[in-house]
Each structure stands twice: as C-alpha cells, then as structure tokens.
Length: 169
Image (cartoon, rainbow, N blue to C red; front, side, top):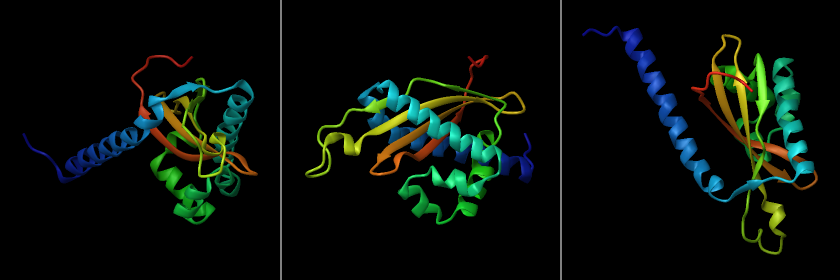
C-alpha cells in the first residue's frame, strides 16, 4: 500500500479534526449530565440568537456575527474579521447552510451561582442544530450559550460533527 504525501496530510487533518471533536465533546459531557428542557421564552431567545448569527454569516457580516459571541469568545479572537476567518476555515457548513433545524434547547442545572449571585446568573444552555450544507452533507452543531448580564444570551462556543442521519427534519 502506498500513500502520497498529500493523501497522508489529508488523512492526518481528518484525524486531528476528529480528535478535536472528541476533546470538545468531553468538555461538553458535564453540561449534558444535568440537562433539562429550557423554558419556552428563553428557548425562543436562544434560537433567535443562533439564527441571527447564522444569518449574519450568510450575509458576510462579520461585525454582526461577532456581536452574538460571548466575552470569552471575543477575547479569544480579538476582532470580527479574525473571528469570521476562523468560522470560514473551520466551520464552513455554518456560513450558508442549505437547511437548518433546531432541537429543543437544554439547560444545565447548577447548584448556586457565583458567590452572592443567584443560580440563574451562571446558567448555560446547549442548543443543538441540524444543518445540511450546500453539498447535501448533514452536520450536528452543538452551540453553548450563556446568559450575560445586560446582554441576554450570547454564544460561548460551538462544536460541529458530521451527522450520519439520512434526513433533515
């Protein structure tokens, strides 16, 4: 069996992406342990934030897309053009999906908030979104959102993995 350097590089890239996804899912596991359905007004607000960011990506509006990112994400990327470049290279399926379907948002039940703060001040939400890209491939995007004081729900991360499902509901 022979491998070309290009083929080996592509294979290593796929392995790195899969390992990164496994690592990110490992980070998500604690949030999934206490998942409960989110109240409808908050669930609607969470869906609106994710949809608004998807709309901003589709319009190539980096500033607007970046505005839905949490402070931690903004600090990590520094500015909207850098953030948009990362999304285009690492998450092309979210830039202009052919179809989008939202699952019920889930909340993480935590005991207590930061010292002196109510528990809801530290509320995290997971929003799963089924995507179909322009080539017909299916993806599952898991968005993590945090309620930010004075700013509502903001996106604090996203993990996208290929979905083996056959249809988009």
